[in-house]
Length: 315
Image (cartoon, rainbow, N blue to C red; front, side, top):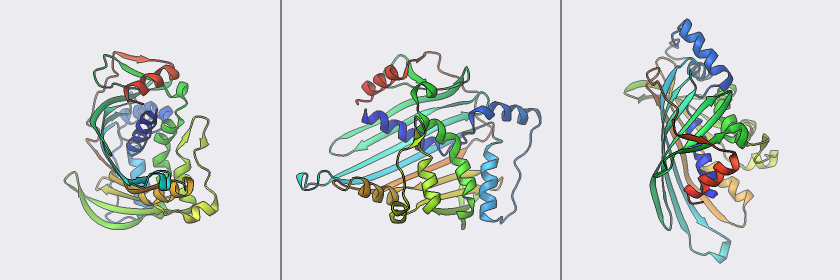
């Protein structure tokens, strides 16, 4: 079961950097842009950081398709139960997610590859996945190992608000807190020049960012009091915007924040996160597709699907 939760969380973090617009408006927006194509506006050479970031989030909404390449680097030092486990254990995980996305029909299809290095080595393991709309519901499925079918369910049946809510809200959050960004400099992404901006989300912005990741009934996983927020380091977010105003690269550093949070929530355990870096690159704008939903997918009720996934992922 722990690996099922980990797989879901990793998928959330990775897909958060994709251009995942609101499901209800995806087909309508796509139809409008198809009927009357509107080119992505070219921003001024040196726009104000907040203006540039907001415009880049808006530019994502005009895209018909794209490819997203996301990398997650994780390293931690663990000593469980204090003196009862005196030896430290070093844990390292590497995750790579390659995703193709089309707005109409709404389909995200890709492969998640992960490897875990601790007292034992696991991986690399490849897991193809697909997310799509069907009969007004958002469906998801994965295919693992030598499976002869895809296993999945719907977000509505499974209560996976953690994934469904986050995909639509993340870029809205960046727009809402765009004033936090400052100009860093210039870089090259996908072989083209890009302007780099950076923000460190603290205080109320940090509360909104973390509470956005909710489950099921929409209740926050953690309630952040003012006292707790005052002790937590900020989350660093970097975005690179190309000459067409599109966010071609994003980077999020959760390490310091999450390490301090675990220290507060689990004081009996020594769990220090040395690295938790998420890096995402967007490319192939309006040049992906068409994508197809797997023909052999089996949509099960959530309990059956969860049981199946737990067995496949080794609990």
